[in-house]
Length: 243
Length: 242
Image (cartoon, rainbow over all chains, first blue to last red; front, side):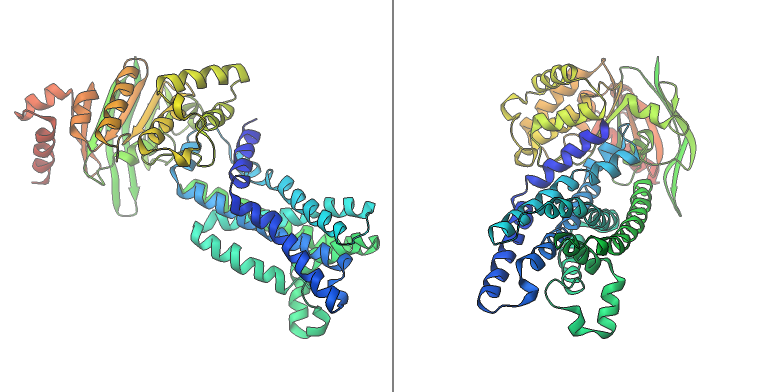
């Protein structure tokens, strides 16, 4: 009950910020439109809609980290968190309360991306539903990063780390914008040691119906998500105790 | 009946003793003001009593519940209105109150009834649909106090409730606090001496973590041979510096 009440509050705080809505729904749509326009003039296999849309759906999730980290950080720095710490709320109410509302937001972002991709020519299939379900572990990874950053950084630092650095890392090491095979070497090795490219390739595998390729990437994503969430919970509890 | 019994409460941060062996008893229904210059230990005392900060040594019992061993029970009988306005900015006044009702597990009917009661008590009707981030300082502070009161606390901590408010908003809040006197136990910290004199049953003056004097406003003025609490406060604090 407490957890859901707090989750409802956090959901409202996020979706009532017009800037968040722009990032959530505007950014993926604009990217799809721009890159599809490029593809229409100079065909590049990378930007074919069935290849591009899974990447954009994943890239849009990077904003989940920014939303959750900003909210947690602002709450932490304000007296609002102090007030809540004097209520019977338990640590699990805080952690799930910050996590739960971002899952439907992540799915909504995925739905918006794929609806627009369908308009631009993506074939309608059951794979889109499966892809939306598989956005959940990726969303948990990004929410975990947000919880981690929000627990240790102030809101200005969060803007830099989650807003600029993370989105750039998600872009460079994901293989969305350029083929990692073309770069090769250490860059490719680093990319495949990080979870971003696995998230994108898992989505591409689902959308193309190549189900046998899903599991290896899913394991990478889940492993990173679990490790990051465990660290995030530890850091959140530590800052809670320090308060 | 005793509402708060503080026994040797101490808080140390490395070399700094923020609260030093505090002993105090506050009765149920009493409005007790803690006065002191910045860094005197008022806010640290409130943080310890509200289970936000762990005491280094000593203990306090709120309606018989220890802040050390019964923290969750203590949290169910207290409420805190922090120094800064502690509200959820994107929620409306009504939704902020609803949030606290939900956290305390009130039923829908009880929530609606309590919210309407508090909106009426704190004259928040004209702004109940307004987002908290759009409220004036006075209304935001009223909302913050309403959020503290809605859980029906038996002990209420008001940390500098009128800080930064204009004269009218402060006077309005005094009326609200006066209306609560006797019904619940209130611990108030303030920098405004006239506020303490106007509202308090008893006043405690702290400096460097120590309680220098604790009595009724009248008795403190009498003991210091001063006409106002402000002058008495200055005298007590300066004498402690010697």
